[in-house]
Figure 1: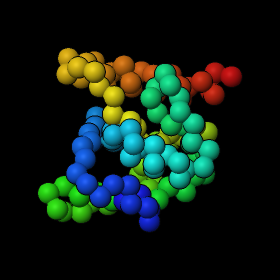
Figure 2: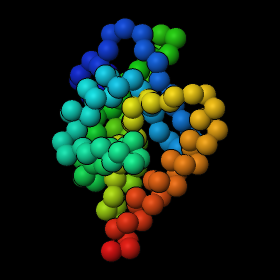
Figure 3: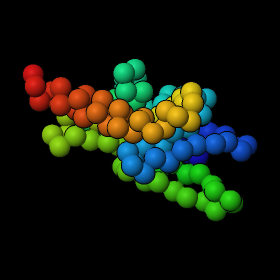
Length: 122
């Protein structure tokens, strides 16, 4: 559930990457969530959605083993130190092979840091 919107009623998978503070989910469910965020724009190089920093993000609720968990919307926003660049912390799960997991976090981290630093260089 995202705010008051039920995203799926069936079982689905996802990844909570605690090393990057990102949540990855199936494309259909993530797209449904993104549609409710005004101004969200995909940054293809990162696979993340850039959002206006003043976006009011609803809470995300999901269940694991029948136990409900709630993530406050403000914790789903990744903000740089200047509060000028913000990303939504939920992304589409697109992993081709398990061998990619070893380097994905480092590569993603580098791209996110580069994207955040862009406004500072201008």
